[in-house]
Length: 349
Ligand SMILES: [Zn+2]
Image 1 (cartoon, protein in one colour):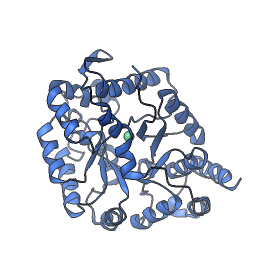
Image 2 (tube, rainbow, N blue to C red; image 1 turned 90 degrees about the vertical axis):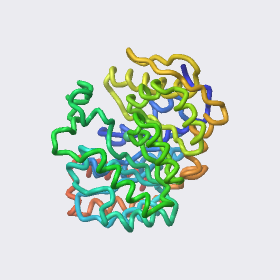
Image 3 (spheres, rainbow, N blue to C red; image 1 turned 30 degrees about the horizontal axis):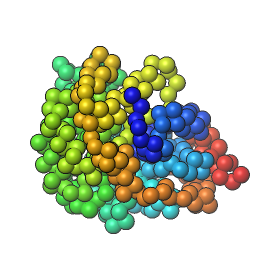
């Protein structure tokens, strides 16, 4: 079932590989799914120093869309300065995926590391939105429960070499206590859909925390176990829940089909009252009222970022990209260099 809404914003999308062609392919997919605009989340920390450049390109060619910048770990980067640079360029917020356990293992910087203090303080002071992916579904730490595909993809964290989920939650709690006005969106429902009471307590403790409901499909099967309680939750926190999809540029037929199913699942869950089928599983829709859906699909995101995406400052953007090309410490790969040069060419055309 397609959504009956016409001005939905998809608050959580990515572009991996394929350079600026990837941007075009993502936008074509978003259009097919009927979203009026999307919010690209740069994942610089995942070992791609052209991710912010893609955000700049997106803003240059399709300015109705939003883009959040990311931090690099290739050198001892001043995170506060990086934030201010990206803000000046016209990014609409920041993205962190540093505490997805695989990335955390590589980077080894905890969410409450003092290196971030001035960065968080600035975000808080300037009320700039931060989307943070922290942890992963609980079954990833459990050899018995982890799905085969996730194990095969290297998402098993129970061998003692990965950070514990509870450690991550303690670190985030510390940051939320020290920066209570932080405009933070915890992605994927903070991977807490198995513990409704704990998530509710967090929402009460930290009144500025928002959640996005991007699957992790595990979330939707968890919802089905306590459908009425979750409906209550969505109604209670209707001003603090943001819609997003994790859509990205995809090329394999099966991946596209899975994305189609996931998009349908998420919208049907929110909108319909009966059984919602996806693959060989089912959940129960929560049939939210139209005015609540409007908040989740659009208004809440806009309240966090602005009615319109911030305009791109082409001059600053070009300056930033040139600085990156010249920054030996960044050790750009040939591919990254190629993407950045291509974006520069567009800016200077
Ligand atoms: Zn994501």
